[in-house]
Image 1: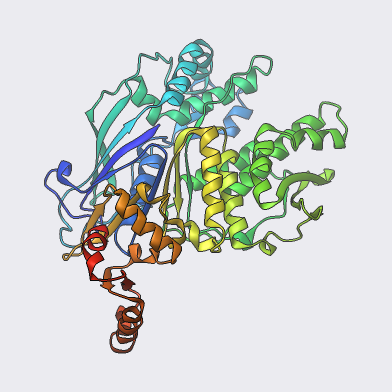
Image 2: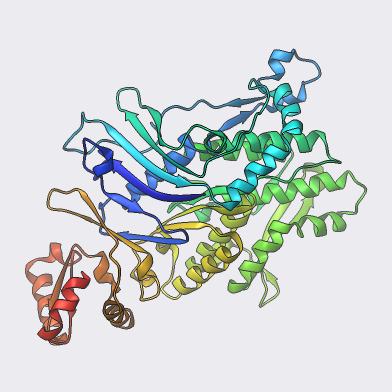
Length: 506
């Protein structure tokens, strides 16, 4: 799945338009998209809109009632059909999507263009070819009855209208139809649960899981709350995983979480579940640990963590209460880390990225949102971070949308992927993604080599002839207008003859 474009009307700094087709357009490239701009220019709002779409409009949540399933042989048919049920969350109240301050009563509309890719069509084919098996589960545990997959389209455009009075929303398909492709996008988690239930009840004839299509790496990452161990004593890993996913479903980009990033809990539980299931099959504890730590997704994680000389593993420490230690090994020293916070900020950011890439399932061909990675990056780590993204993308073919305040991530190599957000004279968002000429690329190389790409993040750029002018004007601004010091970038351009090409760049 790939996002093609997004238009936003009357949400925070995005101004109201009578027709959403006239709104500022964010066009997305298939692989890497880097969004930059001054504070308050709408970057986080755009991500919050995408986050809302993937948690309420597409990939809707379905609840699994484990209690009903555990009593499936003793309850009525109607009760059994409530085991897998839609969450029916038709509200956006958890998300920060208030109207623009100038038009508080006007309509709020979002328009998204989206395309199915080869991975989606492969998922759909998988559902279609196994519809008889999945129908056997659907007819027992859901109220939806049989699945009748039809030929899907590939391109869809839909409008989402927010209702401020009720905090509800409605969806209108503008282009494409509500065919099985659209149903797949909205009910992806339903089909995923059907496959899980089928595999649970047919261990000798399991179906492969659907490829994952979306993940979000928020800017809130409380590594100080990292849990070193996990216990299965009070709840089966399946129950704990469901609890984590339910909590994630309502999480806004603006929420400040006191707990660790949820992906760490999911990874621990997935490994522990494998170990827990193997113990009953007459393997020794050592054999169980070896198999659990050699799951495909753990091998993939550890392969990528080699760039920072780490690997992760799980170890049973107390069988009586099913307690496991989750450890990171420093491969250079051959020692287990006593505390994840002994790692640098950049190392932790790369760990988080790699865990999200593999830990939720088989992520492939989907959308990955990364909000402000530089909060946890040292200056030397951006290249390593982008290198990991490139290596992941060779394997997974995902679409990355990255919001950054870090000039270290902007250079002559990445500049073609940049969309620059700014505020106009009325305080509304404007979006610029110009085509960079060969001459301008040379200028960007100069900025890159002089560590001056911070200019792309400033509200204003003051161009001066030589470096002595830059020192002079910078001193004047700091002395006379200190409030503007962080808003104005002063660049020397090597003489007034270079003014035209530099001014066109900005």
